[in-house]
Image (tube, rainbow, N blue to C red):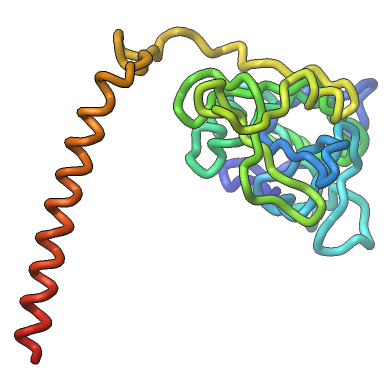
Length: 234
């Protein structure tokens, strides 16, 4: 992904004694044969899928090492988990998961995070389903890239009868990476009492019949208006 405009210009630093911890968001992916798991970037990296352990590759020019001081190539991460979680609130990143990573190799340090050469995914947090409930599994999200399908974090209710990948199974596909629900989720958002409860047939049939009657009446009005316009044009 390209360097966020809010990040100050960074400088190359000598290699630390050990990997640096960082946090980022990514789209969970599953291979076409459902035998491998991976992750897809949210900006420039959307055309590539990387595994739990990966080396950065420049998609613009493979002739230099990542990260380059005159290019935006390389992996990116935040120093703080809260910054990655805040970015995940953006509507376009709604279906991302949160990654805790270990950055190693060449790196450039910025005020908010790092741009670096090698990445190891330490853990994955699923976050929330699109409905607001805590996600408990991953389901096929529709779009993808060649050879890979994108997965979306979902709760049990939204998943319904669709086939899903459990957190444990996805972790195994990624090379035994721990996958769990987002720890920060709480009960602040909860369904209203009585809403979403099961409704028996005796209650739902009259409601559906009334809705059908309203739709039919509206359709009759539209048909009548269409006939009037047709006769007028003749």
